[in-house]
Length: 67
Image (cartoon, rainbow, N blue to C red; front, side, top):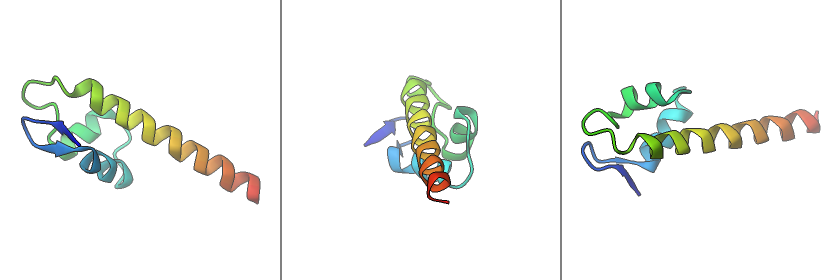
């Protein structure tokens, strides 16, 4: 899905940025170009970053429990 229409940034681009180490909304925006023009996408970017953080935390918890 397209998250930022101004820069044609998709949810996959956001996920890739998070996977490559961008941990904040600002870092994801710098890496992808999202929210650099009209910034109406900033709330969607924030929601996606938060979702990825929740998933990473759950994976870490499961991985820690398996040890």
